[in-house]
Image (tube, rainbow, N blue to C red):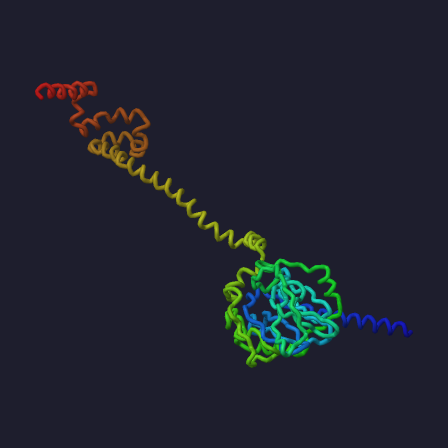
Length: 381
């Protein structure tokens, strides 16, 4: 009987452990447009021994539907030997998902984002734990050797291109995947952000000047010497934005569709509205050629119409003869003047009064008369 309660308690402990790990490993929020580029700023002096650098990043708030800058700051390590793995934005297939940072004995995967000051995309080069004390790399970290004596100098060769991109995957994001050691680090013992870090984020969210739409990607408070110290004299403002800022309204048309180059043509092909909108311009040129041939036959009968009144004029002299009209009905005379030989024979005298000059002359006599005056006129000239 005691075995069953022990199994239940074990399962409950495993469930709580899984829930606690998921609670700070990923934020269940998906944003359709990417965060702005990382601003350019200087690192403030380390306030004392045992503080580790946590780089700044862009967070998102639903209440005002905008990104806001969480300043980088120095944080006291919660346990000896623990390092900070920064959070990062990653493309999740339908939107950008934020993976929160955590404390652990090994630095895990943080999207390949180059946050600077030791975080160049993989691991941490700003210092290391040695004999229970943290030593700072002076070539990377900004420390005062008067107050901090645990220092060393190691030149770090950064092979990562500094492009200030703040997210992984998607259209224009960092193309990086976790290494085996980083995957192993994700399975180690973790500690979520400590209370001072959570308060630091809440203070940044409450500051309207840190919103991306307000500072255009150049926050006035880019880094602080300690968490929440936004009014400290050592506060560092951003020098410049990492890239030209684009409002979320303009960018929302491209990233929501998938933020990948392959997703735009699929959406364009799947939308019947765009195909129908393209058909009217093609239909207009098709209607134009139809109208042109229709106008040509309309012009041709106009040239034929003057010939049609001539047969109507020909029966004018016949109108005076009531005998001919009574013998043949009007519809037959008008419908068969050219097709039937009888009305053609009946009308030899009609063209003679209309053509007085050629009436007295036969077609054979026209040629000698036309040729004789020309010949007679040539000799006197």
